[in-house]
Image: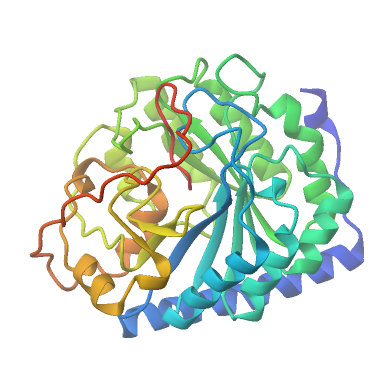
Length: 357
């Protein structure tokens, strides 16, 4: 692509602000790890959904709709206050498309005011220089964009062609850390695209990770021989990433079950737009309890609950959190019965879904 030949110029003030925020965030991350190792009584990472609606309709995705309204700011603040009071370390804003929320900056600012690390997953289509500066001011610390292909197709419009200009703006203006996640697996026509995307991310100064498309239950699909080769090469490119705890992905790439202790519902929480606590994006319905009613005793039970989906899970953010506790406290409890679904708009689900982190 011609865009890859451009040399990105970053001003001295941006470089200094970026270095300062990076240093502060890294100190906070080390404190987060120390706190997690000392105590199992608090959530480490929580995904919150302020906006289920999305501007795209990627055919593998089961995490969006095109009708729901944004969660009101005051309700989001109440949820964030509850999570902060639990001792939560990191909040990642996801969706849907969170940049569609009209008060996103205030949500990010509130996360920072309550002392939590603020991250976001976005498709990137609403990014421009003005929006990036607003995210800088709000205090965003991590941003991830998943790019599915080099050229847009009927499966996904999240392509390097459509997003490269926005990536260059991020490289020039963002003072938060940016990670580009490429994908491999079912639905990806050309696996070589993932390698091109990863190299472009590193060229722009971002970190690079690779996700493996899973089915609608978050379960693994083994990669082909060439896909595995590409996967291993991308893994070597991303050694600077803020999420390097990913050795489990080698098992995922080969379709092997892996042994670990999933602490979702306790150390990792997924809070949907309705304010219900779920294990993760791919197991919505367990336990489906309102956040305001989610007690320490409930979190403790889930900490000791063996998850039926764990051996073939591909949801990397949950796996990364689990690493901090895999060495202790065997899980001896079985899941509670799944809660009956609440009356709400049906989520779009066409084909397979990929990891949200």
